[in-house]
Image (cartoon, rainbow, N blue to C red; front, side):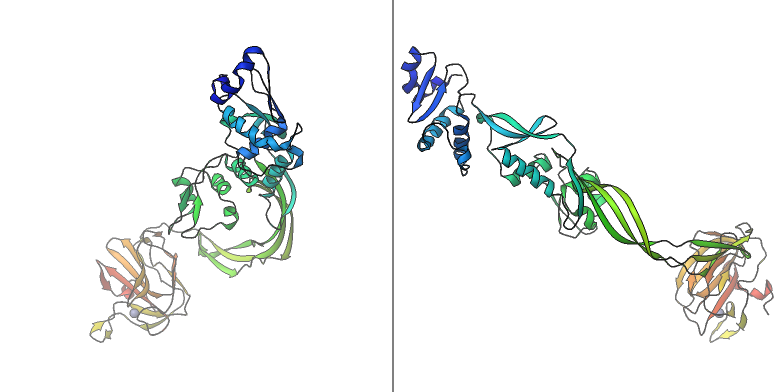
Length: 437
Ligand SMILES: [Zn+2]
């Protein structure tokens, strides 16, 4: 409280101070009361106006103009305050927004504080949303407070105050989205939760995707006031169809055949969503109205007990119905035919001739789509020109299991299955193992 050390004041006031314990200082028409060793007491409304001038802002209207004396001398009072503010513990009366009793931001007056809270609530309203309620999670009040001018940076604008409340004063930190980035990847790299990322980036939750070059704020926000919104929404979605399974002993367990293809239905959903700071936390379904009924699928599923998934040493036919169109060993140009050709319509189930492990399932130029099964005991079998493969390399298969659907891929002159039996990778006549009619 060594305010009297200040040169200007010392020159003016030393004599008076020596005489009086209380100094009454008249600066033209504005009165300032000062007591040595005590806080400088300044008329509230004068100080408000002066503060505005100090901060280079438009003074507020008549409501805050000085009550005492004339307004023409405010500039001088301002100068005096500039001189004294940093040496005296001058406190100003302001309006503050409190969250759970703690001041969050300081405003010029109550109307401005109300404006800040209004804008804060409004910033989380989605355009076109049917808002049911907007409230604060904290106990938010507007009330009187005092600030020390020496430590006060100045009033923020309404927008700045709202942003400060939303981010807790945390400066945004931007990350530029690169090719292959995901929302989960970004949150992991910056040690933030998905919710924090969504709060820091309004609108991101509903968009759900990223674009290369997009600027993402990865600074974790610390909202000083949390806004809870409840809104009603309505949207269309698909309805899953039911699957009816019909058992059949013509197929092994684990095998299935689609008899009727199911079709998804459509419905309109009315829901109430609860958001905090614009991020959805809870969704309550109010009603579901079917607009298009789903059609149930019917599957035939095998009930026959499957044999063990290993070679038995005895082969079985790779298909149920076929016509032999080319036998083993016939000349094909300069080469002999390495298997037997069994003509059948495209899509006919192809079965493993014996149990074993799938060695290969994929494309081989002249064979087209092919499955090769290792049966152990140096034996293997080939199923070529398929349209669809139902197994993958490494799969264990049992004798009779559907491994592919027949086709006409690769070097093939019509829909058929090219079947080979090999020992030590040397093609043998399949007719030695099975009787092909
Ligand atoms: Zn062939």
